[in-house]
Image 1 (tube, rainbow, N blue to C red):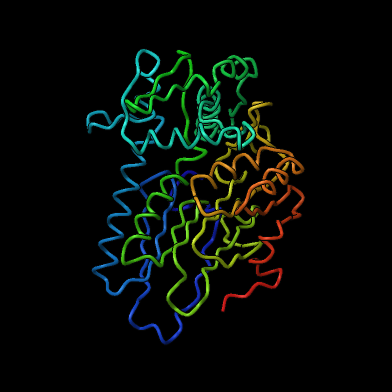
Image 2 (tube, one colour; image 1 turned 30 degrees about the vertical axis):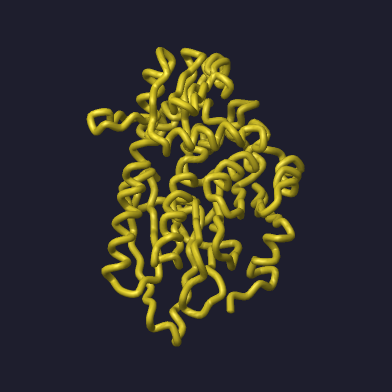
Length: 357
């Protein structure tokens, strides 16, 4: 399950053949397999191979840097990078200066914590690290896989107050007011990184593109092959577990993001039951109402946060959250296979009559 070659993408790209009449721009693609523990695919229309290669290399370099910056488990201080791992070791002793990219991620997450109904919490690292430890042990030794003791999770949950993450904008420093607080930015990092890269490409001569980063899809300007939008397929959760690429819905869109949170990408099995990585901050256990939730909105970082929040809430609350936000649409897939879409999502969904020409 962990091998990149077998990574189960939450979103499948639906790419049509190029239509005639746009010979001046050519479709190119590349795949990166060395960042964010997932497969990242870039497709872009460029005037020539040289232009595409230049921007593809820059995209790759940006992902590599942000992968290191947001890493919870490895240090890169020998490269001059102060990352999440560094902060978890040092920020309770004194304020630590960080680079602007990392600081702005913290601001995004803290500023939108209330909007996400306190469900997407980057200060949950103490709890998530316990789940990570047990998940890794269970994957390494499936016959002896165990659940974390609830008493250990409850003790860790005493130290997940995001208000103890102190951000000093003037000095761009980070301080932990609780010495046992730990950060984990997994609920926002890929989306945030992808949005920064998308903004770079939108300002370039290759602004017609699509990036798929393991459940985080960011679309630039429409494809330059005659279609009015890109086709993004939402993967069947059951097919994903089996390593298949079956899709349950196709969305026709451009200049926006589709981010999916689901139970079928990072999980392990205990006594025949799968336990995934999306942990409810109230129960301290994996949420169980949905197989996946997909959020459609322009900013990929915010979409990442909202997809986590919407997945962790009961449907009525999840739907109310999405409906309260302008420019946000969603699709829910329930554990019994049912799916529900917001009205705006229906308007761009193939199974509800949307077309892409």
